[in-house]
Length: 247
Image (cartoon, rainbow, N blue to C red; front, side, top):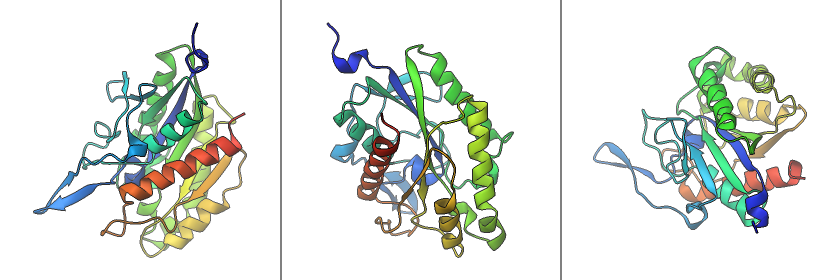
């Protein structure tokens, strides 16, 4: 007889945004070259029931760095998705968790507009993840982006409308009008960080939840979250998902 977990559908989560979603925890500079220190926190350890969609559009066991074949121009490390998925599995809410990495470091919200390469790749990967196994269901988009939009007043001021448009477009293109969105309010940025943070927290659309990363520990670059902070963020996102979207 199958266990309760095995009888449940694979639950799919899209991971998107820029570097802090792609994961920079444990990425260090040594002799002017960046590399990942290879340290995997216990909360990020692999689990046979947690999978990732590789760049080749094949499911494989998930392990950090989750975005190593997606965010290929930068060195990837620990992100929030593995602690998020492990937190869900500790609560036995899914048969399997399927993570779909799409985040790319250094990208602005305008690069995620419909028709742009990053957006279309995200939509394609999300659709393909559903085709590979009929016994699965899309559950949410996890979004952490905005640092690149804090450099100028104009970009920061335009953020809210562009993010609301992105949410509308993703839901329309995935034919999922009520797709849950868990977005992260920035922990770092440039001069207009507070403008973007306020825009993120002010989005008032159905099934859109904002998790605030403000105050989580940053690395020496004052931009990227430490591995420990990524674990905290992933757990905060899991709690938000379980509280607001898990029946």
